[in-house]
Amino acid sequence: MRAQVRGAALLALPLLLAHGTALAAAPAPAKPQPTPSAAATALPSRVQQGQLVAAQTEPGSEVSVGERQSRVGADGRYVFGIERDASAQLQVVIRKPGGKTERHTLEVTQRQYKIEKVNGLPQHTVTPDPELAKRIAEQQARVSQARERDDDRNDYLAGFQRPVQGRISGVYGSQRIDNGVPKSPHYGLDIAVPTGTPVKAPAAGIVSFAASDLILTGGTVLIDHGHGLSSSFLHLSRIDVKAGDKVTRGQVFAAAGATGRASGPHVHWGFNWFDVRLDPELLTPAATR
Image (cartoon, rainbow, N blue to C red; front, side, top):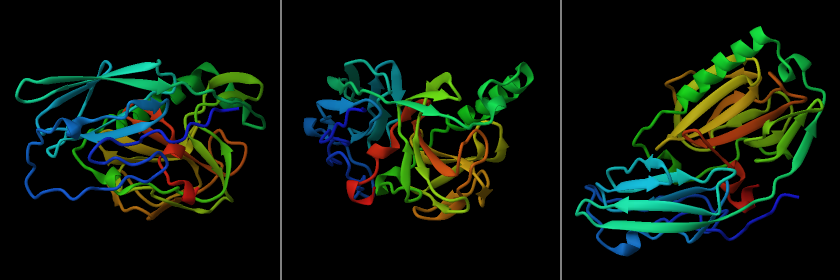
C-alpha cells in the first residue's frame, strides 16, 4: 500500500497552509517591498516526495533547491517540487540582495508506492517497433519542451480543483506493469469517467501544448500556471483550445476519452515543476476529492 502522509506543510510563510488545503493568495502591495524578516523565508521542516512547496522571500533573492535554481518573482514568491524518489534530505539555499545567505535542510518523507498491473492496452504502444519508438520519442520531446516555459505569473496561487469528479483508477508514483511488461512509474492521477465528460482547468493558466493524436497519450493538453508549474491532461477525446489560449479556473477546455495507450475512458492529470513530476492529489482540498 502507498504510505499516506498527512499534515505536511504545503506552503511556507506568508502562504502557510496545511497539506490538502488549496493555495490561497495573500494580498500583495501595489509595489513589491523588501521583506527583511527571517520569518518571510521560513520553510516547512518536513516535506514529502511528490509535493509542491511555495514560499516567499525578499525580492531580488536567489533560491537554489538542491542542484536547481528556482525563479524568484518580483514579489519574492518562488516554488519548487520534491521528486518522486527524492532522498531523505533536501538543501535549499537563499542568497539575499544584501549578501546574507540562508541555508535550510528539509527532511523528506519517503513514500511507498503501489505496483499496478494494467492489461488490455494496445500492444504496439507497449512494445513499439523501432520506427514507432522514434515517433514516440519525437512527440514526447515536444511535450518536454512545452514544460520548459518559465513565466513570472502566479496563476497557481488561487488554488487547484480536480478536472473531473470520478473514481480514482490510478495514482501517482505507482510502478506500472503494462500488458505484463514492466514500464516507468505512473506520474499522475487517473480519474475514470465516461468518454465525453467535460474536463475543467484545475487552475488558471496559458495553454502551452495541444495535440489530438499523440501515440502514447492521445489527445493531450498542457496548461502552464506560471513559475514552471504545468498541468497535463492525456487521453482526451476532444480538445477545445489551442496553444497560446488563456483559460480560467473551472473552464471546460476538453472532453475525457480513451485515446492513445489507454484501457478505458479516463482523465490522466499530471503536474510538473519543469521536468519534476509531482503528485496532483496533494494539490486539492480533501473535501473536494
